[in-house]
Length: 114
Length: 116
Image (cartoon, rainbow over all chains, first blue to last red; front, side):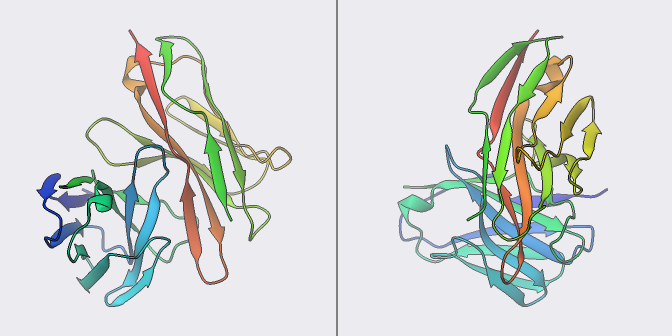
């Protein structure tokens, strides 16, 4: 069963707290992504990972970092969360290097930073 | 930079009516980007609905169609007769190669409500 799993689905944190969003995929995909979506905006790429320990910044990396120690797991970390990081976060994966390939998405994590 | 503009939602139609969601794009790096429609059903992640990587071609899936028109830089999504189960958010997207890497740029999404 091809699946991208995100945990947790909903999360409420206070400003200044650390946040860990987890993502897993069971398809042995090389490439994984973190996006966020805010009301009235399209999905914005935060980070992309081409494989284990091979990560690159996306369009809006400030305030975030990522970790990929195993091919099937990709974590997004917010050190000292800010209220403007309230958003819906989507993890995705694709079989190989980004090209015309399909992205497979998780169901999203709705993060609220108070 | 690259951009995707699609119909502002929400869009409300009755079951069995026809549907068109407009999408136009601008790609700065390559002449013919890859074009996609993704759909997000309630409580689920985005999933690919259809994609077209060759200009002039048409993609289709689940009764939906979209034609890659390079003259008008458009990729409109159409369905002749919608069903209540088509209620979802639809995202147009393009894949383009920047100086360093390939990127997928998404539109804002169009929320479709189909009335029974």
